[in-house]
Length: 476
Image 1 (cartoon, rainbow, N blue to C red):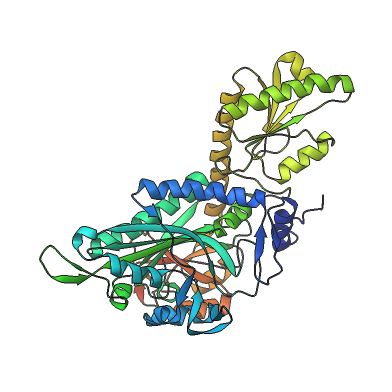
Image 2: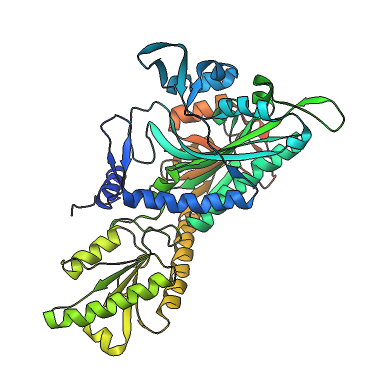
């Protein structure tokens, strides 16, 4: 196994080392693309499945829309095409023939879905339409950083249509909360919910809301977005319905998305110098059993008990693996820790005699994280331990985030704060303000948190009065 660069030496190299050593992903022969290996994909799948359940619990259904979109569709919404033009991959030849109209490889699906909804929606009885799709999209990206910056990436995109703005805004905020809960409860990632500034809005949206997470190097990561599209796409695609009052009206639409960037967030927010630290709810392997023996005659008994423990835990619904490789226990311990497996079960000859096992938790290194427990009721003990690990990872991340957000009231204070953390600063929502701060500090306006104290302060750039503060940070 290779070495992992310490985070304090080079955080970016640490991130890449962890992905390589944990066998999560590899670079594809196409620039900007990656191959996600089984361990990395299973982590993403577990996160996806938990989020998908939340979508369905809120009344949404999954569907699938085409990968290719006519260029003319994107041109129907001016802000949309302007925002995405530099990132488009365009197909001009198909089947050896020049296409009459170029096709865009899906960068996002508002346009093709808007077109289809216009065919389906005729009456208020057809509303609301609550559809999500899981897919991959392409946005031309020359830099490659697995899960964070890739030309093709996997995500989900929800698209809904409503009879009025009140209902569509309720949907926008509902899905923002769904994302926040998924990050907090499933991934043990605290995030800040807020409204994006005018300069950071989604192209074609009236308003964009996001959840922002703090990574281990104190940079921000936009972890999900929820967009109020107003009637912009409805008007572009003639998405109309006959209302109860017998008048024809345009729909109000939303879109919202979360990508595998959240997988990168899990790596960066929880990982340490040894490797991954995965929350049990999403870990591909929740428990690794490591048999320990020195003599051949010990092996038979230890392996028999280890196999029995494996069957017991698997029957209890725990994602468990038995490491029966002919390697040293030290090698197996390191491998288990580097992969972020929440619980390690050690079984040796003495444990067999005492009807016990040793449990080692990944979130607490060394002796403090180890306990000896009886094999009787082991599955329940491990489930309780996993709940504790999940809660502890969240508590650690919350404490880290809280300790590294500074409330500032001057531009000089902001400049100092964003050198090594986040700044909560009073500013007006003006693209010129965002641009000045970004140019001079490399920090961007992450969002205006939904929770505001309502106190009037002066904008640190213009001096104008404002009752809002925004989060500024350097970001991925």
